[in-house]
Image 1 (tube, rainbow, N blue to C red):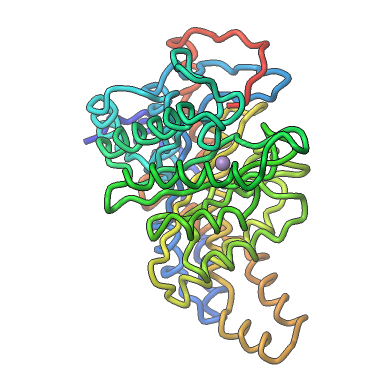
Image 2 (image 1 turned 30 degrees about the vertical axis):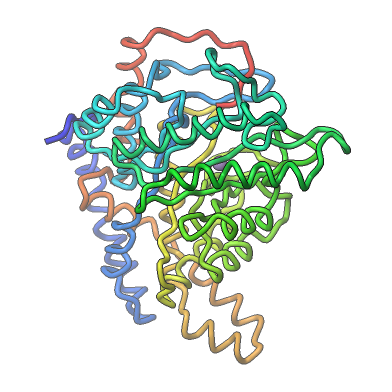
Amino acid sequence: MTDSQISSDLIGAENDKRAAALKSDYAALGEKLARGNVDIETVTAKVADFFVAVPSWGVGTGGTRFARFPGLGEPRHIFDKLDDCAVINELTRATPTVSLHIPWDKADPKELKAKGEALGLGFDAMNSNTFSDAPDQAHSYKYGSLSHVDAATRAQAVEHNIECIELGNAIGSKALTVWVGDGSNFPGQTNFTRQFERYLAAMADIYKALPDDWRIFSEHKMYEPAFYSTVVQDWGSNLLIAQTLGDKAFCLVDLGHHAPNTNIEMIVARLIQFGKLGGFHFNDSKYGDDDLDAGSIEPYRLFLVFNELVDAEHRGVKGFHPAHMIDQSHNVTDPIESLISSANEIRRAYAQALLVDRAALAGFQDGNDALMATETLKRAYRTDVEPILAEARRRAGGAIDPVAAYRASGYRAKVASERPAVKGGSGGIV
Ligand SMILES: [Mn+2]
C-alpha cells in the first residue's frame, strides 16, 4: 500500500471522460498496425515495461546564470521532491525511480528508503557534485576537482564520490554518475595530458570502491562551466575513460552535451557496438546545452536515438541495459507538467522505434535503396502512437491524459499552501 499523492478516484473520473475515445482510437490503430503484421498488444506491453528515471533536481524550477523565477509550491527538501516525483509516476506509470544529487539530497538513508517505499518509488543512479563548493568543505573546486593540481583537493572529491556510493548502496541504487566541471577557460591554463592523467587516477580510486553489482557512468560535456576545454569533453574522451577503468565503467550520453548538429545517434551506435553505452540524460536543445524538455525541439532526433536502442534490442546485444534518466531544467513551466510530458515523449520515441520494419530496412540497406530505407524510418515515425501510450498508462493505473488529470487534481495549489514561497532573483542552474 502506498501513499497516493493523486487519488485513484480522481484518475478514474478523469479517465472515464476519455475512455470511449481511447477505446476507439486504440482499436483503429490496432487495425492499421495489423495490416503491417504488427501486433499492437506486443508494442503496448513493451511500452508499459519501459521506464525512465526522474531527476530529483528537476522538480524544482530551474534557472539560468542570469536569473531564476521560482514557481508556487517549490519543494523545500528531498522529501518534498519525492512527493512531487510520486505525482509524475502515479499519472504516467513511466517513472518509478528517482535519481538523487548529493549533497543537495543528502538525508538519513533509512528515512529516504522509507519515504521511497511509502510512495512506491525506487532510487536510480546517484549523482555526485564536485562542480560547486559545499558550505563546509576544506578545499575549493574553483580550479577543478578530480583533476585538480592539488592532491588533497582530488582526495576530497574522491571521498565525496565514495560517500555517494555508500548512501546509494543503503537505499538500493546500483550506479554512480560522475560529471565534473573540470576544464580550463584559457589556452595554456592547464596541461591537457597531465590533467587527464590526474582525472583517470582519481576515477580509478572511485572505481575501486564500487560494489560488485554497481556501474559507474562518466558523463561528457563539451563546454560550461569551463569554456575553453573540459576534461571529459566528448564521447572519445568518455570512451577512453570507460575502457581504462574496467568492466563496470560506461559512458553516459546527455543529449544536450554535444556541438550543434552532432550525429548523436551514431555516437550511440558506436558505444553500443563496443559495449560501453551506460545510459542517457534525456533533454532537448536548439543552440547549446539548453536543457529544454525532451522531444520539444527535435523529436525526430530522439526517435533516431531510440531507433539505435531498439536495433540493439532486436539484435539481442549481450549485456545491453542502458539507464534512462531525464536531465533538464524547467524555467517557464510547472516542472511536474514538463516531466510528465517528457516521460511521455521518451516513451513515444521508443514506441515509434518499435514500429520500424527492421527486415525491410535491412533489405533496403543491402540493396542500396537509400530512399526506401529512410522512408521505412519515416513511416514508423509518422505513426501516431498516442493511443498505445495512453492505453499503457490506463492499464497500469495512470491517467489517459496525465497533464489534464494533474491540473484537475489541484496538487500545485495544495503544495503551494503548505510550502512557503521562495524568493527569486539570483541566478543558478538547477
Ligand atoms: Mn546530464
